[in-house]
Length: 482
Figure 1 (cartoon, rainbow, N blue to C red):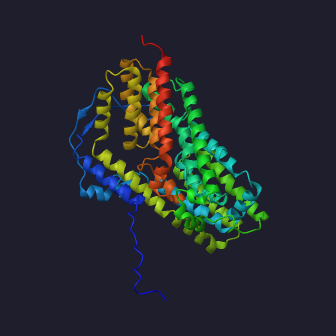
Figure 2 (figure 1 turned 60 degrees about the vertical axis):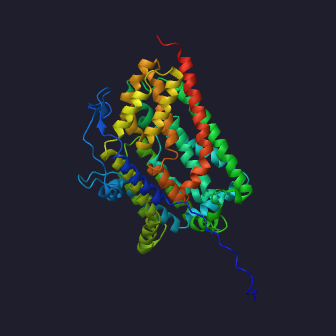
Figure 3 (figure 1 turned 180 degrees about the horizontal axis):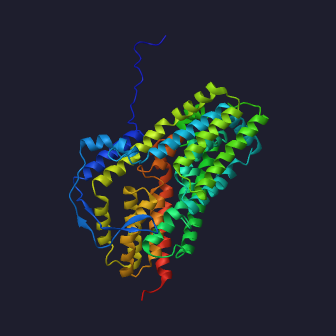
């Protein structure tokens, strides 16, 4: 029996970091407040048949009537993040629906037992060689990023790879790093990415092949450095799980995703068939996006159809299949809500007419600078702009027609400005809370946003040093302007 005179141990309360929902809603409020401070303005725009978009015209910026966002606008922003309540135009509703379809599909496949059995078989075969999954998978994601701007499509892989990494003795942070950094480095070092390099080059008025060698150099160096960082972290976690940035969530994440010890032992022929169809579904998705002109609607339909097919082949029965699909979609409902919140920030910025004003300020900032200073300031301008415009293609169309011609006066090739643009957006889109890909991926893998920031800040620092050095070298190799 405890001594009644013994004082009870003091309980210390730690301030917890707010959830992703609170962070995003706070950003909506902050941006709405800025619309009362930052003057409203717009550039004139002309239609571009080649790009299928309207391009701003340099030198045409003019103040417009202010449209400060009030309390009611803030309340409606999360809803408008999904669709425009006035015109019923879709915003992020297609991405959110895609995530729910992925959840339902994964729920059905999981109910067959094939994923658990396949993970155990893979871990048995890879015993002692698990670390090589990291560079191989990051390389595949980087190829997708540099060629077709792989972003929203990666959301489908978090549910798949997170349990694999946990079963291999790593953690959910490793899974996020493999996917988000792998594809992100590819986008940062885009070579033939139509949504970044190609559209930015077209908007700047130069062939996308100009500056290609420097982009290959940036891609190679940043990829090698990032893979080394992730492999070092993963090895440290495997040797001592307490070194994990999400160690306190270890038990909860293992219970949610499952571990190698928790999975069933038998790997049956039915499991093999289900996993074959599972892999074929992702292969069809990649083909559809790359070559078939697919986007969210087609991918959502694919996962719905594949989920039904696998449920029938897996002999779940009508009731079991429906319960598994709905349960899987329910697991990712929070992710879908986060995606709408993230898009709501952009809705507020656009409604407040502040984005063009920020671009106009940037246009005046770089005038008259030394060439090396110019290109590095241009990089940081694009970093700031990328936060306000998380869409790579959207920022390319917005900023390149304005900022690329400024390089002519500074004696800096337009292709180098395109490289600064794509590198800046690639770095920012690894962490920006306005990106549905970042916030959605973290939510699926159950990694708190502030933990991701703690993990990734050395990567951001290293990437920035590499990029600024490469851009400066690009200016020097360009020679003296005529």
